[in-house]
Length: 91
Image (cartoon, rainbow, N blue to C red):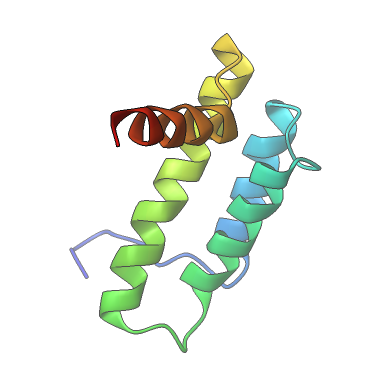
C-alpha cells in the first residue's frame, strides 16, 4: 500500500455506493441493486485478484449507467436490445 493510503473498513464501499445511489434516486432500481451486490463482492475477502479486476470493471460500468440514466435517460437494457436488433438485421 502506498504511503499515506488508508485502507477502507469492511462495508465502506457498500455504504459509499448506497449513498451515491441514494443521491441519484437509484437505490431501489435494478441497476442500483446490481451495484450494491458488486460493491459487496469487491469487499469480500474471498475474491481473487483476477475476479476483483473483473468485478471492478463491471461495478464501474453499472455505476456509470446509473449516473447516465439519471442525467439523460440512458437505459442499458434498451441499448442491449438495440444492439441485438442490429445484429439480427445484419444476418
